[in-house]
Length: 245
Image (cartoon, rainbow, N blue to C red):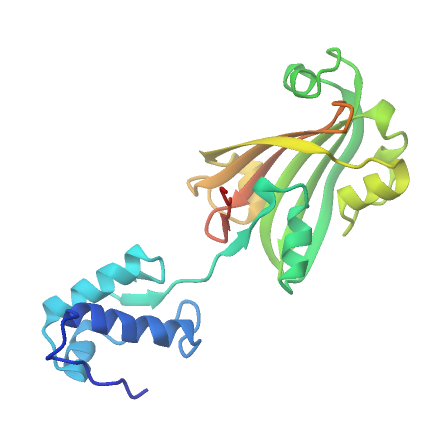
């Protein structure tokens, strides 16, 4: 690729001009995710600048999360993270992903009736031991493990859901069509967590990989709580957008 010459008489520092040139190359798609950038020495020769200028430009690109560095190997284009709005909305994450043209599949890992434990009873505001339908589902995006979610719903609100075919189904679509459930609002809490062995194996990460843990409780217009879930998102593939107005 031929780079535009840097303006040595302008007010903008050389490192910033170099950073902008590299950023334009990355954002145009000339270099795809995980592809290497030219070495510091090559960039220094290409632009006729010092290594100090090159390092400052690369440092800024790392801060912008456009590149990452591997010791002894150089700098590489960072994979673009999926940006989701659903933390601050009542749409499901699968809906956001499909709208952006991604291929979404959902595998049902477990699906059964059970008795509400203390956490489920507290979140759903139901008696301890009341029947709940539990779902454990693994979502893949473009073939890659992306989300593992454990959901509990009061069985009296969703009779027969434990027997429903949920493979590649949107839970909220099923709740609307089959039970007339329309979510009105939800609370969500986000934290950084490490997965246990089972969760790590399903998400195809190590137990030392930091994940985004999201706990959620949703309710109907009459304040009846119908869903509580805990989701693990791969933090290397996701970031969440929350607009404040």
